[in-house]
Image (cartoon, rainbow over all chains, first blue to last red; front, top):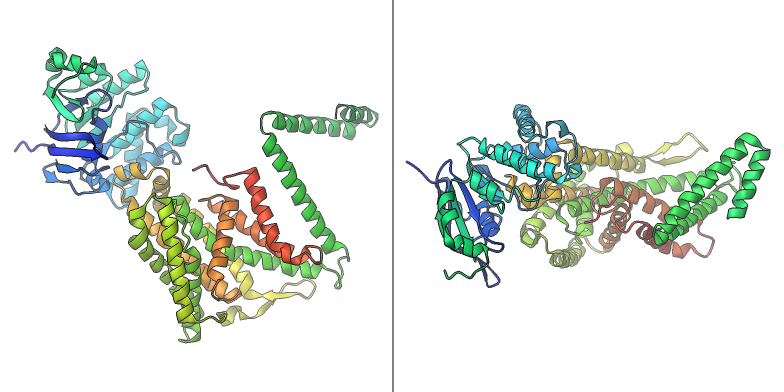
Length: 250
Length: 368
């Protein structure tokens, strides 16, 4: 009964002749912490976009939570329990911190097209405030997201992803642009996440990635080159070659 | 400037309190102005002075025309009051039509070139319901509003939805639709100008209580409705949960979608509401003015001018833009020196040029 959370079969995506993702096979089990690593242009973000539904694959199939979602739009995959952050901070600048989190809770909960507020709203509001507390933004609830610092916007992004109480969390370079102290805070936060949540993470900061991840997938030129535990990855000569820019025949 | 400023301040010492304060104020104002000019904002400073001078001159000229013959019954003041009320009711119509356009643009970045057609369609539907079917005016207006909304929604679902983000295609598609609609309306409703008769309750004039003046009640009603619609829209966008989702969609559609919000459905609702407003504007416009082929383009251009002045996507901007456009149109038609009357249209575009020179994004617009 160990149903996998993510199953990618022969997944490919090409943009005008460039194969960004090529025949990727991947399986992520419930509660797993999976890091996806690779040099720039390896197709990591495209892979996330395919899983989240922001882009449609050219070939192959995507299963989430044991269900084929290849043809579902992004918002319906979010409803199934998927949340993501983006490579560059993406918050809703015109809304306050609380409203950012509230819209996210609303989106996950459904019923955002209702015109009238009902009893559930109070619960969503308190969930939004709870998420703000978890990511350390409790004192900035009323601030407009536009006025937050870069680090705070990253925290808010994480809060937005977590308020939805997702079963699968895709984090695209969460540590990018953060200070050392903020990185440690982030690592602590990710380690403290409940085991109900499966986490997939793209990260260039090896310390953060290998501290959190239990399994690592290395991508290069759109292909999965290697998969293993952090210890295996550290020991593998091919990983060093890829990162040092030596060509590697697939 | 130095010497003049100096002389002022010596005068100021002679007459202590007021002169001194005046000199200080003037000194500060000059410093600020010069700072503005030197901080690389020369162009803006210049446009601002030209626009300011134009506005002051025009206001002075209107003022002179109005009060030159005194405040008596035979003077120009009664006429001025009527013209001002005309301008207000016209502003109401402009706002009804333009608020829908600005809502749709703000959300979807679609410049709906068929917005004027929805206006005229709403008007014609109200007209045919009241005149040939004898339907109650209020019911007819509601039906016309909803019909224009449904029509707009169908337009969005069939033609625009799958061209999201492609500005040129969408503009061309909506222009094509407006041409087709114009011909079809000519075919169905004919080429003669029609007018919707107002409801009995509002058909008569109301006494204004000054100069024995009276004014059509319906026109005052238009102002009230425009105000109510403006407040309702503001409340909807700023204060309701749905409005919050709309604003989130404006900020970042892809991300809002990743949160589990069906942004396309939100857009469709917004398009429906925007089209409803065009239809409502048409029903009112058909009652105040008249419905005829070509009115679609007139109101499309007016709405676009209003939205350009106020700033694309801003509701407050649409209100200010509608007021400015209506007042400039009405006053220039009457108060331009004799012989220049036909040039009143030019004044409208001087207004647009002045606003754009000052703020290229419009008065309340944000850079896209």
